[in-house]
Image 1: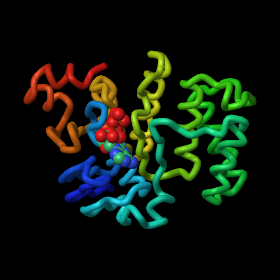
Image 2: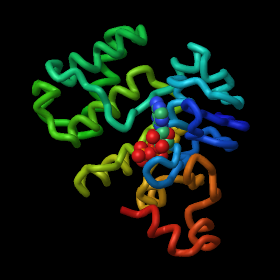
Image 3: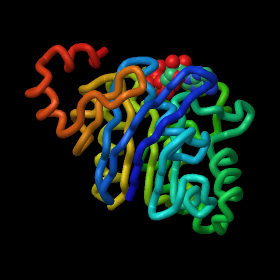
Length: 230
Ligand code: ATP
């Protein structure tokens, strides 16, 4: 579902991602784990077509990452979601559904289903008055308004209380059960361990390990585990 070959992204003289190669199978939750500054967000933004690669080939659902059709098939959850503070969850989500030309009856049903499942209360509240966990749930619902095949989630479970963290992790497992393909970044190995089928570990722009979480721990020892755990 996703093919990345020889990806390099530089900002001026600085290389944020170097020689990155990986592929993601349909229906898999694929983790990108690494410390701050490892290049995770840059990689995800390239996948989502938000930044152009300096070198390399990136294909999502059979389309190059700068193809508009790819964007229609993809839902992106940025690390910090820019929410429009004066809007309510419903007005905000309907606004995005409109951008994707989702018919209003379909959008209503989809939005209700996502908000119900994410147990988002206070749907009439201003986004600006919502907690971080509630805002994250609204941003997750937004990533689903176009019913994408591929979800690219940048640290979806970071910075949340334990209950909300577990609900985001559980929701991610449900996306896989529904046949979605998910790319999930984290700097906490526990988060990827509990949802991902395979992971790549990034450090200073490079992939330094890959495989199953257990395999990485076996090959690289507990140190890797602790380095990437909060
Ligand atoms: P974090 O966990 O802190 O979000 P990350 O693994 O997502 O880290 P990136 O955000 O991809 O890392 O950043 C990788 C490197 O690229 C960092 O050193 C960052 O400062 C640099 N970088 C990212 N975006 C830009 C930019 N627009 N201009 C210059 N440097 C950038």
